[in-house]
Amino acid sequence: MKKYLNFMFLAVITLAIASCGNEEPRLNNDEENDSIPATGPGSGSGSGNSEVLLMTVMEMVGENTITFEYDSKNRLTRNVHSAGTIIEYKYNGNGHVSTILAKEMNGRISLREDFTYGKDGKPISKVATVYNKEENYIVDSKYVFSDNKLVVTNIPRTDEEEKYITTEEYVYNKKNLTSLSFGLNGKIHSVFTMSEHDNNPSAGLYGGALHWIPSNNNVLREQLVSPAGNHDYTFKYTYNKQGYPTKQLKYNTGSDVVVGQTNYSYRPAN
Image (cartoon, rainbow, N blue to C red; front, side, top):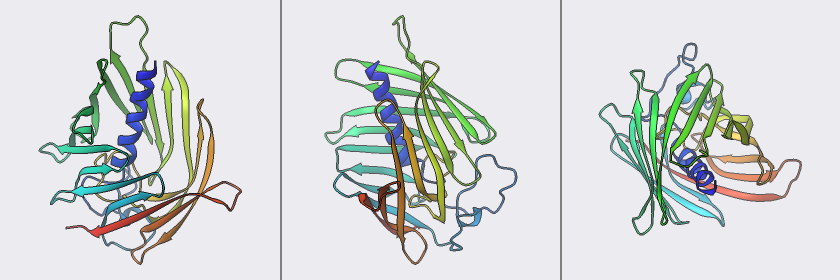
């Protein structure tokens, strides 16, 4: 069972870093017909500023620092974690991410994800290969989109009598992800709730690889319920003149004691 929970953990890592925004910076004012929202100040970020900035460094003080690299089309190609992980992104001819590789600093691949897309540009399936020292295993994923919801079902290829089937359920409004649930064999395992957001562009608004997960604005409150423990965090931000956050302070909700800090740096898009 542990290895499948590790798979869920790896999925959280790649999601958190890759799903920040669209594949390419663009502005879109049409909010009426898209169940997956357009990303950008024109789609309701609230900043009123159309300057495109790409996040280059995210420093989680005392924990991890992540540097971000982009290609000439402003697409995320690589990020390096000081904690010891490198994640690389490759794209197909339509500009959609085709492969994600998670590597250790010595170059050993720990996770490979290969995506297949439908005609609408949304993913329909994924094959993930997790490389362990003891054994490797493969997980097939199916993507099902409905109004304001995406459900991903992950089924391992195994001869074991009991299969650990995991699910990911993303619920969002026209601007932002509002909840993320992980399930195991038909039962909810962990639930993240992002109940409040600001009206400013999110730190990773542009350049993100997983364009189908909306993240226009910055989370103000996040709650987690899981067997490993619960949390309820409130966030406060300092912004630059373009409206992007440069510093995030984390508090336990109801307390004025800072329990975490994240700093952000940017560069202009090409």
